[in-house]
Structure formats: C-alpha cells, structure tokens
Length: 274
Image: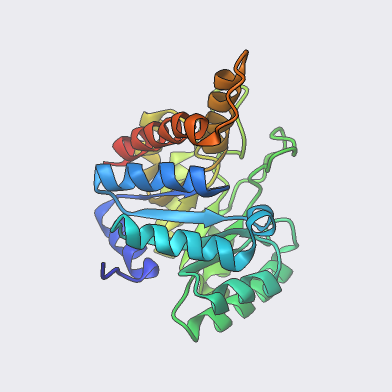
C-alpha cells in the first residue's frame, strides 16, 4: 500500500480537524490485535515503540514485526519512536527505517530541549522522517500527576520556530497511566497553541479519557491521540483471568483471547476518532 508521509498526514488531519490513533505494542500478540482492529475498521494506525519495548524485543526485530505486519494486513500505517530519551536512540530509529521519531526533552530546561530537538530534526530531514517533541509536563508512569506545568502558547511558538518539529505533544491536562479521577482537558489552551503554531498537536495519556473529551480536544487541534496503558492492561488482565484455575500449557490456545481483547479495545478507540 502506498502511504502518505506521516508529517503530511498529520497536516491533513489538522486541516480536517481529525486525528490519527497511535498505540504502543509490546509483543507479537499486542501488535496482532492492533493490526486486526485497523484492518477491520479500515483505519490508518501509528504503531509506537518505547525504549523499554525496543530493549525487550530488539530494535531490528521490533521494526520488522511492525513493518511486515502493516504489509500483511494491508494497512496504511507508520512506525514511531515514542518518548525517545536521547539523540542517539532517535538516530538509530531514523537510520533503521522508522517513519517518525519523538525526542522527549520535556524534563530538560527549555533551551536544552530546543537544542537537542533541533539536532534530531536536522538529522531526520535527511530521510524526510517526521519528528515529534514534547513541551510542558505530562506525568509519566510512576510520576506525580499533582504537578502541573501546562504548555504555554508563546513557549510553544518559540519552540516550534526554533526546532522545526512536525508535531508537538502538549501538556493540557492529561497524564500517562490510569486516572484517579476524570481528567479536565484545557480546550482553550489546545486551540490557542494550535492557532499560534499551526502545528499538529499530540495528546499523550489517551488511556481513560472520556470519548467526548477526546473528540473536543481533536476539534480544537489535537491530530494524534496516544493510547498505551489500556492496551497492555487489557492484554494482561485477560490472560490473568483465563489462567485462573487453568492448567492449559498451550499458549496458542490461551493468547488468542487476549489478542481479541486488544483488538476490541482498539476498535472502540477508532470509533471515537471517526
């Protein structure tokens, strides 16, 4: 399947006030569940890998799994480095064939975040690879969600102009992991950042955000919605339930139910963004 460059696809989404689903995979089974959902719903998908998943599966192997899976299921999709924590990792992913990389310098000071992100963008431009960055504080797993450091529109403008990033993950009220209470997204802030930067914006921490909140965020400028925690949670919860008081040792009989659970979850996410 001929696919559009991701940076062009995101710009298209921005113009149409739509968004693409991006979800992490952790092994063959979670990848298969995602791909089946994308095929059945006839939707494009961004397949994401973090450093932890890359270290678990191996960079070349993980990339090949995703690339071959997209081809096998005949899906328009892209392979993306999620929360890349170094220039070196981003460079490795660019060179191996990733369509998109994220450098997450959100915990660095503003100037250092700009400096390294700009360096990643310069390298990525050689192969026309999409680059995502993050500005503001979106709590990661294990970090406090009580801390608030929303992305300031003026800072976003300066950041985009000085880095040339194709997409920007913004802190607007979401967090990674499960929420203790319903998140309150700052839609006015999303709209203000979108207007001042004219850049596709990314919503991290999409797991558990109510459907209407996601749709409103998309209408105001979000073009990519990330889901990760729910994917691995439904896979593991399904396996744990199956294996209670179960002596089955044939994983080929056990894993399909967990794959189906992942697929059903992803289908619900696609429906939110249609």
